[in-house]
Image (tube, rainbow, N blue to C red):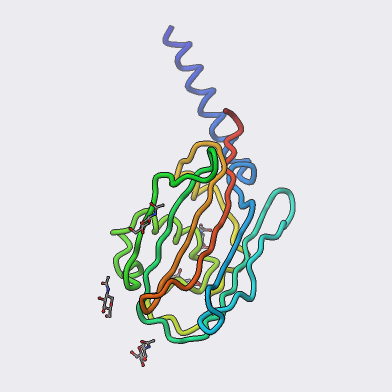
Length: 182
Ligand SMILES: *[C@@H]1O[C@H](CO)[C@@H](O)[C@H](O)[C@H]1NC(C)=O
Ligand SMILES: *[C@@H]1O[C@H](CO)[C@@H](O)[C@H](O)[C@H]1NC(C)=O
Ligand SMILES: *[C@@H]1O[C@H](CO)[C@@H](O)[C@H](O)[C@H]1NC(C)=O
Ligand SMILES: *[C@@H]1O[C@H](CO)[C@@H](O)[C@H](O)[C@H]1NC(C)=O
Ligand SMILES: *[C@@H]1O[C@H](CO)[C@@H](O)[C@H](O)[C@H]1NC(C)=O
């Protein structure tokens, strides 16, 4: 009896390792949509996904800011899951006044997303921002999935930002989570 349990445990351990190794099937970008509401405030230079090869999808984003510097802002980040249309799912976070970079611990979910982006963006410092916003060749990896376990499915991350009391734009990133079963 004891031996049987042991065997099952070892098998599932091996299975999990195998799933994590096949990272590109686990978690990938499927689409991106960007909108800047007012050209006098911001313009999109780039907003696209590119297949780098063998299921590896990279995200490229370049928002040109036409009114600098950005001193105060509000970000909201909402997660949706596709069931019968996209429905809000688990997270809806609002970060005021660029407070995120100063108080990362207060925003654990935002922090996860930031951690995943940090190596690929110039938005990884505190306000004010006096430059364009760039995300270059961002790819998803196993670490992010391990920290944010989600069931197999299709998701949308919606990112909205506001400065001077006015909503400036929205970026929607679509992600597929495929754990290889279900
Ligand atoms: C941002 O702050 C700088 C210096 O602190 C100031 O010169 C500038 O006018 C501010 N910009 C806005 C849009 O409030
Ligand atoms: C998320 O939170 C913001 C601010 O509290 C709110 O305006 C928005 O309606 C919420 N979105 C969803 C989908 O619940
Ligand atoms: C953000 O900062 C501005 C200027 O410092 C202030 O007027 C405003 O009340 C702050 N908003 C929040 C939500 O803290
Ligand atoms: C970011 O880069 C560091 C150093 O190269 C690396 O250890 C870390 O895993 C990277 N993080 C992500 C999310 O790619
Ligand atoms: C911010 O991103 C740049 C590359 O865009 C990188 O060189 C730098 O180490 C990053 N800083 C932090 C704090 O992650």
